[in-house]
Length: 384
Image (cartoon, rainbow, N blue to C red):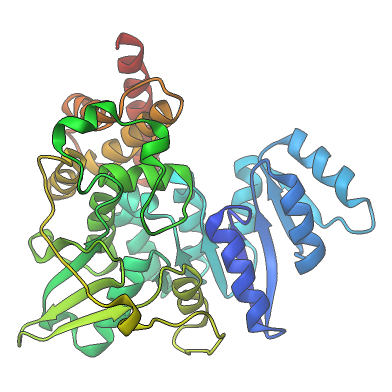
């Protein structure tokens, strides 16, 4: 029996993970579920998968959940960050971390410290605290298997050779909804425009990050930590069809690519069942139907967030943490119609200018700087 805990069970990754576990059958069992305020969906998940422990956002969510479940069906229900960490720390062979944003940092640390496999769908925790999380994972001999389709692809492509033989790690990017828009048109982007991803159905925050291409910059930093990849060996290639999920170029000139449909159940399944491959009969890729695959270099002038993120990664120290925190505040403000699309990148740049110096010596330092960066971003928002 393989026990799996899901942090962020009611989100896009969490619900797909439960679909994968259901398809895998009785040899996989849910140990714990952590969610936020969507207690109606969480109650359905509890009735279907019978977790031992559940965490929700706050006391109000706990009361509503218990009223939906009734005494007979209710597992132990904890609240807040304490509950989230309890779920992350409970015995399980695999923990899927799909918590959004920097809130996923401490749960990721808890998972690797106990030696469990971290199926990582939260890139922000490695962006902000990758040095410390990877150090703990190595010390505890814990596996980190990425769920992001791009890093999952790199993980698979690297089975073809040794890390020392890699010439380049190549992350593909769809280019988002504004790839073909002229630069001057970006001044009129609406929230609805930014949420129209051409290929993927994702949550709002990551969809906006895809539109600005900040997401790809964050993925560059994540790849740096996951694969100990030097930044000068990580490249971004725009691939509008999103069929080639990423590539690894080896020293002999060979390019290894992983191709698949736009279905997040595939990388989730890979992260949960690795190193086994299981036929769960998801829709298969038909290359003849796709017809052609195209590639182009990214436009750093049109998408300044991509360059900001890559520069922050190279700078190291506090810069990636500041970048991530400021971006979370900026995207939230954009989704609330408080700032324009183009202001997202410039707000992040302003916060980086103020707080980029220094280096953390502990996770506590990272979390402290995360708070400072958010505070600074909110202050700049009030100033316009």
